[in-house]
Length: 149
Image (cartoon, rainbow, N blue to C red; front, side, top):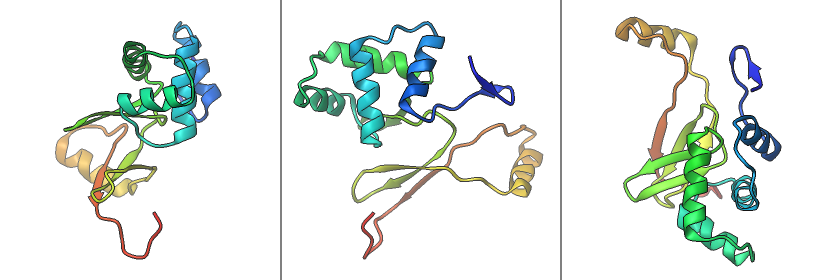
């Protein structure tokens, strides 16, 4: 497995995701490739049902069970992201360490990569006695007036 500074290299494109599957000994079946392609092209967080519906609308032959099994295997392997919400799981293509902005108007989850100041991380480590190696922050808010986002 490719590493970067002793850590597993982040998946940054569809090809990286397929290579990670192969490196983990996972077969890249036609159905698994369909799911990966959809998540990389959609660039949003989708439920298993939305993934199933979109693939079938595209004429891709895949069943409910196959979608659920492949999503579970891909998220367990760290190839895709699984976000647990009170209304179910959502899956996304970003698997590296990142944070989320949750829009309470649209229910959209937006991936953001932010770097906390080093002195803040040191302060947290001093207060907790835990060495911070990665973090994820969940922001919540409402869509700002006059923005297209």
